[in-house]
Image 1: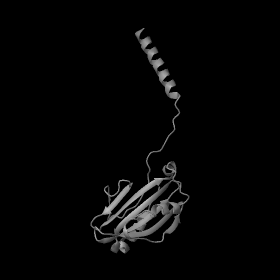
Image 2: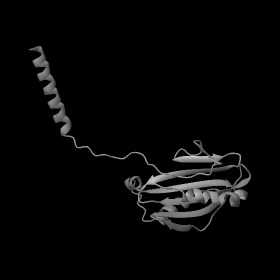
Image 3: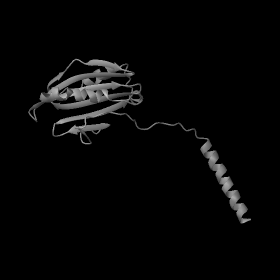
Image 4: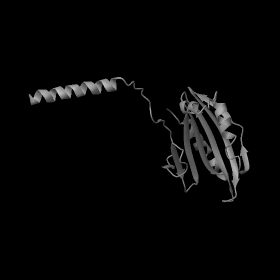
Length: 176
């Protein structure tokens, strides 16, 4: 008798819990974002350059650094930031990039398409009074079907020609 009552109680509990959960419709969401990038072997991953970056890399001896920040189009859309093209995204970013820095220069941008990915690159620099030197930034933007990436690599301006080709390789290595 005791076993029958326990069995009846467990069956009733199971049916009630199933009925409770069965009424809730669930929708699956993907969390996180995965992409691949190649970085020169003389650079190492770090975590102290930019808290918004998905990946950060540097070589303190050579005094070169870089970060990648991504924004999914879905997240941007939720913020009513709907860009019609990679050019719109780039222009919105570059207008404020280093805008308050002394002797700021930004080159004309260069656009490229590889497969279903769009790329824009440009050079920017400014004079940093604190270190008494000019800083060079290689600015790269990548657009995929779902995401915009900002790839920023920098060094001293006098090292621009030495590292720019590697900075470009980093940009064009992004893959989802």
